[in-house]
Image (cartoon, rainbow, N blue to C red; front, side, top):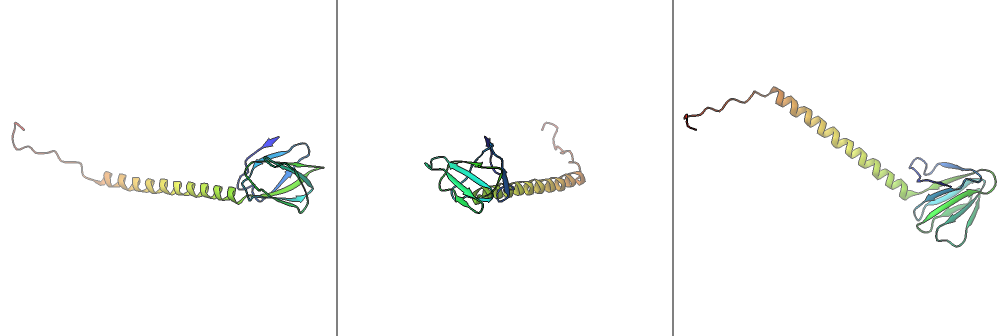
Length: 133
């Protein structure tokens, strides 16, 4: 069985399911699984009954748990829309951008500081007033 976490790029795109090669995913409640072509068998951890969807059919994930999808006959195309996964990916990307911004800011400030230090006069020796000090 193919167990994977969907990336933001995969969420909302068509995923091809092959016969005899089910796909296991963990989707958040409210995520939608839509069938674009073929027939898909879907089971979810904690649900007593399985679901069979044909082209145009849609399943809304009711609770947390693992979902297993499989093509019934031939290949099938599914589209998974998980707004919570998309939101997590967007937050992760935003944090990366903030991190890059901080690194850029520190790099610019470090460059300015190095330039100031290189232009600064060397420190003068301290003059002592008495020989015993």
